Length: 494
Image (cartoon, rainbow, N blue to C red; front, side, top):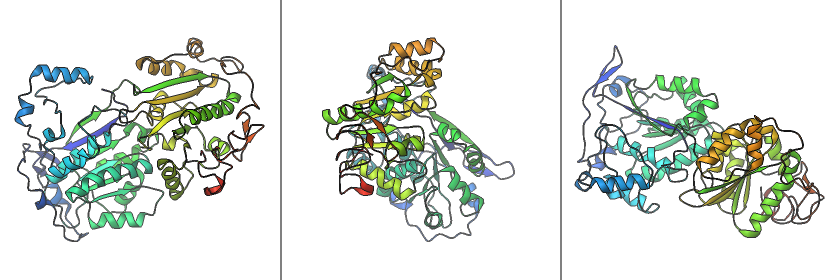
């Protein structure tokens, strides 16, 4: 089983609250005869609610009763499934795996919705629907709690690092939550807070948020998390890297303090084995021409193939092309760019790391790391934008002597995935990352002219290149053509 991200979920125990010590106790209860419609009749929200009422409400935790077919599954069949999916289990009274969604005991509307997209449960790996791994338990958790009262805050909070990821998780949560008539909202920066706040005050069951925006609402007493009994930290490591630890601690301080922790994610970094990883060691000045060669080669072989090119800085993104997605674009621009790419109206998306973990487009066939990221974790997440949902993907990575200190970690990732390791990369690792200015360039034939050669200038054009080069014709990177937005052609790359 491949774990390519770290997500932390917290479930909260207890049937009654001890206010003086904020301590909860009690036995978990099982609710297997749910009348789901009893959950839904919702009066208008009343801001003047009592937090104590939420704290004293019992929490129903154990909402799963295995079917007899699952309980009585032969051990040989269980062992075979575990071996085939590379799954390792430990602990006491571990339930048997289920082989179909009908065995999961999800409500019928959920199973019907699942069947539209998935044939059967899948192992956890990039692109396999990990969002559902915490969204579906969250929905079942809400359905088994008491009915939401006027003025209540959310029962489920999902924290994640970026607004793009928040929007995508909200889409999934709405798709499955609405069939059970649950209210879902998202709160993130870069958009007006007033519509988000109004939705929260009307009453929601599931809140998907970035830490900064939700903490603002909590600090202004606009929302209380006293009712929250299911917390998800999605991309927890990324949120910490982005400096959200103070906001996360503040948010958690308002939630019940008796969690049971379940962490999903391997401590050993591994990439999706469906991705072919190609690392090219070359000089910095060679990168623009090599990028152009790769894009033209991909287009010639797969005319409609979607490719994401990752760069490290906004300046590089704007230099390579005028149309790109990075943190300084306003939300409408970023949404427009992603939608153009998702719908296939453009075939290449140029992005900074703001999009590395937030883009969920299932048919991306290629990823190009124009600039190597800061660490191997980001490398794995970048290339994980391809090879999703059991499809094959291809990743190209430009690696220069300036990245030499990271060569050893990259080799570990390549080795784990049984990928080819270039001799030049091994040489850099052996030197401890001390590469010279002129060495290790397999593609050092010079720059400039030729088919699609040359350098990119600040207007996204290719100087000294042919009419099929970046910045040239109707399928160019960020320029040329006609009829497209911001000067790009209808099938421009950007």
